[in-house]
Image 1 (spheres, rainbow, N blue to C red):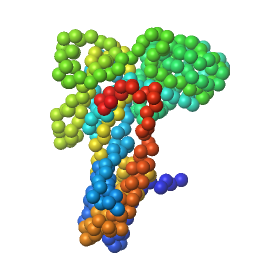
Image 2: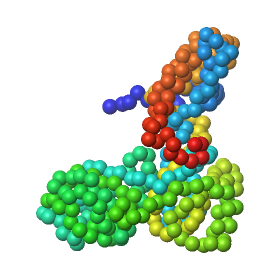
Image 3: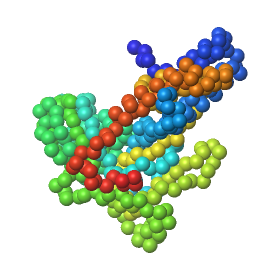
Image 4: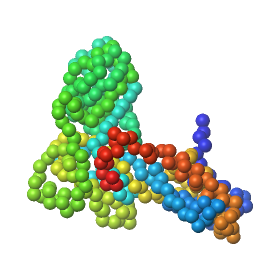
Amino acid sequence: MADLLWTSANMVDEIERGMGWASAAEAQSALALNWLNYGYWRFLTGLWTDPENPRAVYQHSWSFLKPWASMNLVVGQTEYDLPAGFLQLVTDPVYAYYTASNTNFAAGHVGSFVTATQTLTRTAPTLGYTAFPVLNAGDKIHITGGTGVTVGWYTIASRTSASIIVLTTDIGGTNPTNVTWDTVGLDPADGITLPKLNRATPEQIMAFLRDDAVTDNPEYYAVYPKTLTEATGQRYSIRFYPAPSTVRAISYRFDLQPTQLTDAAVYPLGGFLHQGAILEAGLARMELEAGGGLNSPHEVAYQRLVQNSVAADQQTEATDIPTSMADYDTGIDA
């Protein structure tokens, strides 16, 4: 079934219809796209006014411009590239927590599983993580449920492929399915506590690596810009200290630099909840170019819809912090 999401091409078509361009020439379509991108930029700034009080200006910070990402640390590697569109961290990175559900055992194994054939295939990670940490022999996973299985922590004997791991003991059940599990690669019984990651300067990190080249779970990080190239634009890297002594997963939240819309079928940021405001922002620019003013129909519609968008986006994140978490230091903007 087709969804109701509008692409940039759909929005450009609406602007062309608004101008009465039944069969828009290439130059007219380019102009309509330019007006749409102006409206898109205006929406993304989060600035808006109350039509009844035009002198009052408000600003909102969109949640979808602060996405989560993750990376897998590599033993001995201290430097990692950050993704395209990265502007700055919102909070300190954290050691990641992964979950999986509806996980089935590898095909071809029947009856009660034994040590030699106890395999578990991993499914896609949740919460926006892009990949699971690479689990190796000696790491732990936590089985949380399943048909006839015994929940608890299990040790990995080996990793036979990128997606299959072999456990040292049988978790029970007969060809079990719908197994749920989570992992940070640690069993609380082992008494290992991952440290909080603290921000340092790039110079401090380099000095630490030079003067005390130990390996352990990283405790410090620094973000720094890479040399600008015309091919990739401004990119950033992150460096950790100490150098990782084992594979760990790191999650982080960052401010995203949006890219402009093209004449292809590109979905604007924000999705269904905000596409109406984005379209009206483009149509308002069209009206302005045609001689419209502050009270033109599409401008009034945009101001109404952007207020609705702000209200909807404010429901995405908690505003009242639970008392038990009120004093917890989350990092940079705490």
